[in-house]
Length: 312
Image (cartoon, rainbow, N blue to C red):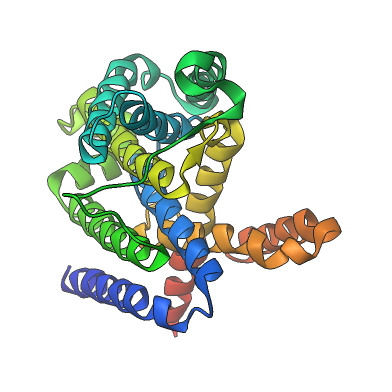
């Protein structure tokens, strides 16, 4: 227990050190932009990792909550004149309510049935965002006003990076604390065996709903911040491919590993930018890298490397 606590503290310290040093070693604002996008994806992946990695509940429609967070912030600020912070909070409330409403019926399912149900949820949200042209701009998307905090607006990438870095660290800290709490132990029991967990007194339906709502809130926060940072959004951010990308980030970094979610998000956000010059071979190279990691490090990057380091 003491070693795990020290590992968590060391991991949070290492994450803080990397976040502090990174803007000083990146050569220009383009790479800083990639780092910001990686941080936003990492926030969403930390929440999704709570659902998939800790609780063992698959979701192939998680980008729906990302998209709802982005569009609610965009619609309320651009169309209704709401302050961005209030719009962001409204997006959190709406996403939390939606996740709570669908959690009980969806999470009664298991395995590929659960995957198909969450996929259907994501498709419904993407279709609604694409069809409601008056409200969302339809497939062409819509512009989003800049983020304003108490009269201050981030002047550039450096300020945005600071905001995202702080929120990412807080998101990781909250996830780690949840994992070692009684709720985290109940989620681990659910992952191992729902029948055994129920026999031991765990309220299965309650804990499933709780982690589903929490993961939706993480995605909503990331979506709202992305909308204000990018200044423009389209329904593609709520689509199936975006959901698969988030799941891949979690699996690549290592399920049930908060730092693995961060590492997976950073890698899969940066790799397409690195291979952008190799237009014909970009997809092949990405696929080969993912296959190699999954073959030789099947538990994901961070847990596999930590296990190897522990053996040595």
